[in-house]
Amino acid sequence: EQGISAVLQVLYSLGAQLWQSGTLPPETRSKHAWVVLDGRPVAFFERTRLHFAAEHLRNLKVQEKQGIPKTMEIVLATRSWGKLFTGLFLFLGPGRVIRPVRNLRFGTTEWIGP
Image 1 (tube, rainbow, N blue to C red):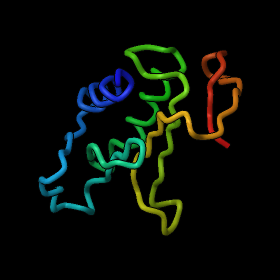
Image 2: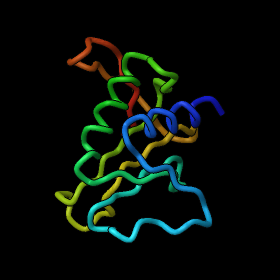
Image 3: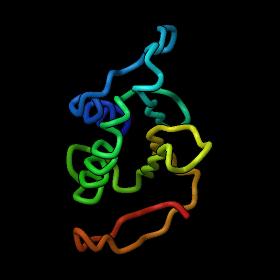
């Protein structure tokens, strides 16, 4: 699908290390966090880059640039959330509830989950 390949290209351009099933993940788990796309691990970032990556993806989504779908859900789970798994969780699938909200930074409509 075009949305998946566009997301992977953007992640790679931001410095993510793309991951393929069957290969070992990085040993430095304390320094890296997973990127999960539609429930499947696809890449990992240094934890210090997660926030930047999430914001960059959100900007591309809202501006409808680089093929990032405007309905993509972007969830950044950080250590500050407590016991949740740290990572960047992206959802493209239509099988979820989404609603339009006004993005005040860009003055456009952004589609988000509940």
